[in-house]
Image (cartoon, rainbow, N blue to C red; front, side):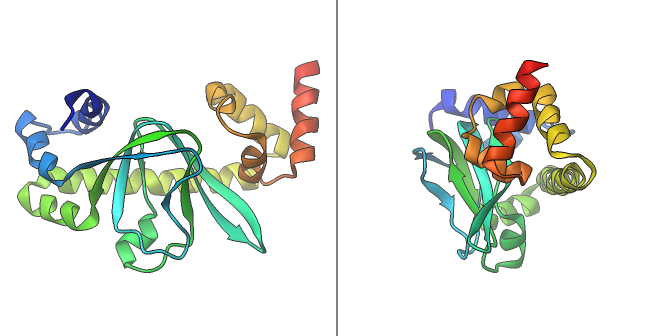
Length: 195
């Protein structure tokens, strides 16, 4: 296993309380490193999610189809975890797809492996719980983001909080995330540039 490719994942795991170096050794046998190219899928809508991915590098988007239109719900970049949690936990078909927007290096482990780690040490139960709580908070924040802010305010919030992300996302995907038409997004961007 290439140690260089593991550094970001190791730092991610080290941030959790009660981390001890030997705990990281426990997860190594369960990990595989996967490379996917721009446009390729980690998961397709309708498939059952069996794996969790830590994004070592690259950018992915989560989206679903509604009335034939793609709706982006999340952009996941380096140092974050991605999967279809609902599908993973319930062992049912995923209602969303996970697609690479850039070439990605993923550290992948299965849900079954996670269950084995839960038995090995309480630390892994804590990691699983905190990751799930973070996923819930992200979903809640995105719902508030859509319901409480105007389209212009949504765009400005991303500009203020994660401007570098805007350089990496194709505008058509950003528009589906903001839940506005691409033309509306173009107007908002031009207006902000002028002010």
